[in-house]
Length: 141
Image (cartoon, rainbow, N blue to C red; front, side, top):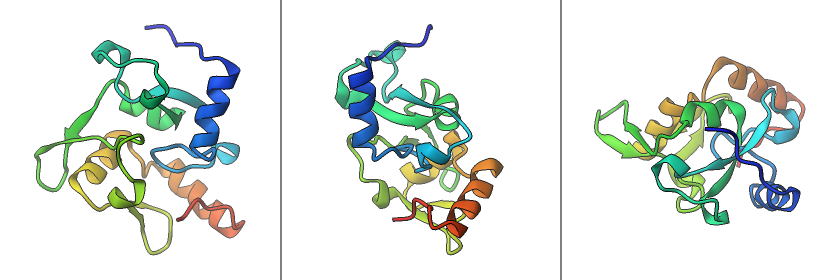
């Protein structure tokens, strides 16, 4: 499916709402090695819309790994769990930072499944988080 084009004003609205962070891995857009995209939380292929309540700001890594998925097995229980939905879920209810702030830790089946499917602890992100921490630019909450 070809990439959907969004107006500059819609892109700015989504980016500002996300505080210029990937709404999944919380990488700051200014420091990301990946381009950021407007992502359909529920894919158009699965009946989602382009309404702003179905759009999220996502780095290329998270967006590409998520693809059209809305659920994934929880690596702890094996049960299929919904993926994190930035419009319906609270980020810090599902995710926490490791003690060194380099890794995301899933607090719930949704958090663990999302980390697994989106590869939210991929090596490049872990290295970036370590660098951002040393520059006081880490997205920790």
